[in-house]
Structure formats: structure tokens, C-alpha cells
Image (cartoon, rainbow, N blue to C red; front, side, top):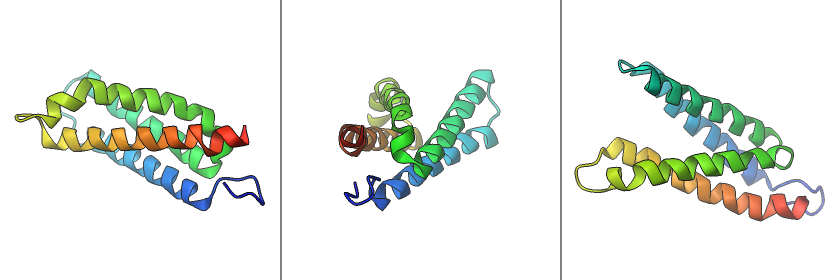
Length: 121
């Protein structure tokens, strides 16, 4: 956090734009490759919508920091549900990679929430 302005360091803005792009891309890819049922479409829509939320956070990280708790819970939930099956032999490497990205984002979201956002609050 910048002590002079009370705003998070510029790197946080960039990080949350990257998180937004990740979710927007994964969600859009889910729509594009969709030949399956409604559940997959709903999941793709929700992933895409979280990308919109992360874009809002990127614009004003301290103001929108509390919504990141939903992101932490969602991403850790995905890790619990899909991580081990797709990180083991026989799992889907693409899903495993996306889940690894979710784990990384969840951990950095926590670092922001327990660091700069907490100090500012």
C-alpha cells in the first residue's frame, strides 16, 4: 500500500486485471466449446461473471476488497472439488491447469485481504 495516498500499490491493480482476464477467458472458452448441457453453460456464465467482479476490484481494490471473499471461497471450492482428480494420473491436464490457476489466485486474494485491505480497513 502506498503510505502517501492510502491506496494499494499499483501492482495490485495489475494483478486484479490479470485475475479478471483469467476468469473472462475461461468463462468465454466454456461458452465457445459448449456442446454439453445447461450445467456447463451455467458454470461458464458464473466464471465469466466473477471476471467482471475482479475487473471492478481492479479499478478500486480497497473499495471492492470485501467481494474477494466470495472469490476466495469459490476458487478454493473448485480446488477441493476438481484439484486432486485432475492433478493425478488420468486427470484432465487442461482442467488441472485451470484449477492450479484458481489456487494461485485464491492465495494471492487472501494475501491482499489479510494485508493491504485489512490495514486500510
